[in-house]
Length: 446
Image (cartoon, rainbow, N blue to C red):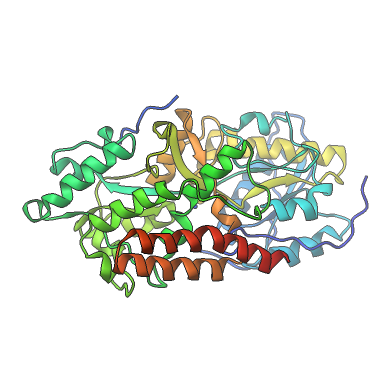
């Protein structure tokens, strides 16, 4: 058993640390609460204690219900759920781990968290829960190779397409399998925009409200493919990047800004409301993802999320950009009985039909075999790509160094480029992208 000492949990991998027939491939509560037990007939000899420190406030009600359901089925098991208030998981975990009855199930959501809490996590390699995963893309390991934590939900993003508009233009979403086929459809729609009554892309604004779509999300394709070339996922920001795939970033960026409702030289000031342009049927393509589903659901009858096709070799096997900070770990300091009880509970959450349905209803998608579909179309699209064997583009963009300054310089360079597209102005984009990475890395790391 390891002794518990106070540690700092670093949670969150957002912008600072900074989410059809598909192409074939090889309301939240901030209060903390605990569930109460109840009993009924038992059909399996299970016992022990489970203490789930929940990371997601919006999932508290569902988590409490699931705990109650489990104890009704297995009355010799006690399941307690406590949900940390929004933004307080670090403090709550540190406090709870100091107690004699510490959480048995908690979150280690990123590589910094692995360094802080990995010593206290049970190795999940080859366990029952790990064997149910449909991908290892969200797993976190330590330097020794121990499987510290595994994802239980994720977000996804890419290019969202109004499939009805594409079909109205005489094309099919099935025809889009790489950059060349995407370019054909996009340029044809743009060339006939007056005739069709809609254009290809919405405004790809570069103002503060929308620039994240290209300086954060779209930029991921460049970082991801550099990471992929290295043969292993980044576990910390590299000191430099090469910009090898910047031409591919340019391919997709140019396609969007040159085949749009608005002129490129208007993007710097922004204010075009790209989401409304999409939901009003004024354009067929937008850079967004699962987080944008709520704004599109019910307003666009049929839409799908497709990968960032950008001209990279083998991209017909690409999936969506998928990532998470929601990764489960089991406390290795718990008793063997409680660790087994926690493992059994986790397996039940993702494999019992009713429990898994509640998990998906509250979380959108879970990366486990035979999990039911939720109503978030873009998460279902991501899962379908994964099921077909497509590679997941993980969120390498989360490693952007000194992220605010780095992205600010990218926006300035892109503003100049969209105002006057040329090789010279694009060279400044490359400087901000590549040299800016190195200089900001030095500012942060010395």
